[in-house]
Image (tube, rainbow, N blue to C red; front, side, top):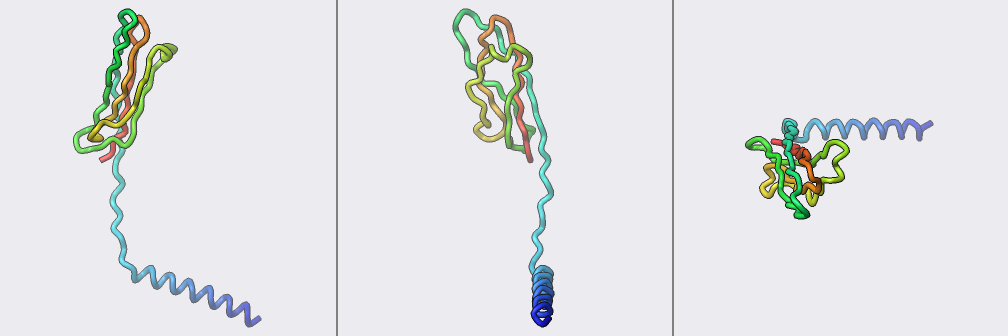
Length: 119
C-alpha cells in the first residue's frame, strides 16, 4: 500500500515539476506559416524536323520574392512517349523550375512545367 502511494506521489511530483518548468521557460515566437503557391506554364514543343532532336529548357517562374521548393512536369495524353525529358531541376537562384525536353514526334506536343513556390 505504501509503495502505491509513493509511486502516485512520484507521478504527481514529476507532473508538477514539468508544468512548473514549462511555465518558467521562455516562449518561442512561432513564425506564421508561409504560403505555398503552385505556378504552371504550358509550352508547345515544335515538331521534329528530320532526325535532329533539339533539347530545350522550359521554365516556370515563381512570383517575385518567393523561391521554388519543388517542381515537375506533365505531358498530357497518349503522346507522352514521344516527349523526351532529360532533366527536371530548380533554377540556379531558386526562382523557378526548369525541365529540359525534346519532341521526338513529327507533330507539335504539349508540355506543362510546374513550380511550387514559397515565400
